[in-house]
Length: 248
Image (cartoon, rainbow, N blue to C red; front, side):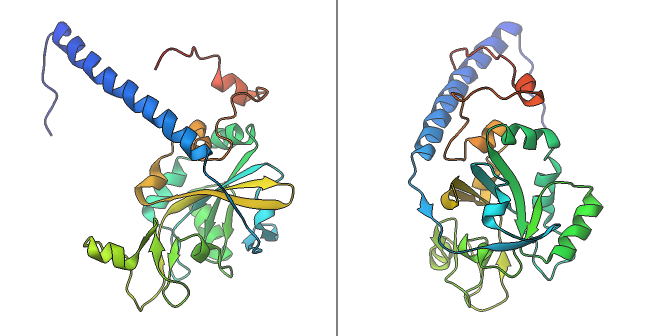
């Protein structure tokens, strides 16, 4: 592994300022992209989805826990597997109670959903020491309808808005035309208006890694960071702090 070049302080400052220009441009572009994402239209969900959870059978509406928004982390866990996907596991390892508290302060719930039966999910959760909301979509069309379980016998394979044939043309095999279901990662966002649920956004593949702290999760949602709302109380407010809004 090569180490960075050693230079004088003045040379370093020239290089750093050049990089800062690109960082500022990226920040502005991200802000514009987030604004465009918030302007996406949404689709009303008329199908009823049910899941198995620690407290029994629940609906998609229940997963909101009374909040206005819901982010679903599609965690790869095939019913035949004895453990969850290592990459998805690494992502959830970075969850924290503080992350959930920050999201909740913005009327947003975050849950994990996998196709494995609840017994396997609970066993794996215990091994990992996780306490985060995790539900099984084992007997549901949820994974298929939201493009993270691909099975040509159920529905034509489409992942990240490309068909199996389009992937083949790119030399990137997606899934066999005939064979067992295949699991893929992703995230989906939903908005609630009363008891009506709307699908606002989904991202997949490397796009599903565009998250970090709570603000980055909120950037994926229809309501965004909601910075014009009344400021939350408690630890979430203190952690956000009064950060000066310097020119980016």
